[in-house]
Length: 170
Image: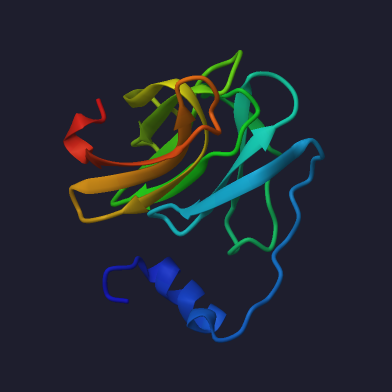
């Protein structure tokens, strides 16, 4: 608890560390789904979503613990083929894994934002071939792992697990 910001500590106390659950608010837009959420250093939440229109993921923000959300906006640095992705916090940065192609489920990539999700300019290409759904987990202060669908002919041909040093996401 001591590693969290004051606002995050207040949210944990109010939220009872998961002993009780309360439904959050809905995002004020249709056509988005398969969401992943992360906490920002200032206590806000960012919701990263698959979008049914265009070739970019969408993001929404909450400053009240998820009770209300801003209107989702396209994240112009997050090219996406309408596929699920994963977002997590890593220190003061955010990490996103997704199939970063506008035309097909391919190019599994981990992107990094150092400005609260405004821009995503650092990238690490995990797998250039067919790839789909993914999930991220922090292994340590210096490593993240991605578990993802991937294959030579189809993105559903197999599953893979890759460990990435954070210093390699440039």
